[in-house]
Length: 126
Image 1 (spheres, rainbow, N blue to C red):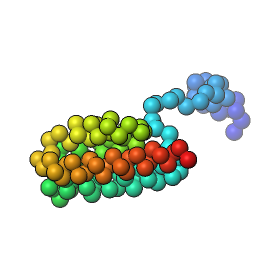
Image 2 (cartoon, one colour):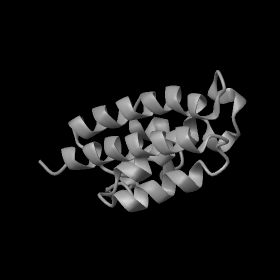
Image 3 (tube, rainbow, N blue to C red):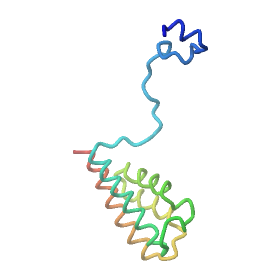
């Protein structure tokens, strides 16, 4: 089918890729990690999926508030892995985990998480 015939079938000019300007993707504020950082970040997200329920003393994250479930965990991991400021990461985690009933478990988790996040961040500096 020719291009003219195709256009006559109702294709709008706005849908024609040859009519669009080529533009780069819009920056949506997402962190840009290298291969090693992505692997470390994925490992950290998997660790969060196991550790967060344990910190709250439940079997599965489905039993937790939505703000503590997997999607929110991934957002927190990305946020803390995007900075070298360990105090900022620590405060982010403490605020996020404010409803944790066991302060000792929470503090232990936060210390490990900040350490892991710093490793992700530093993997991009090499």
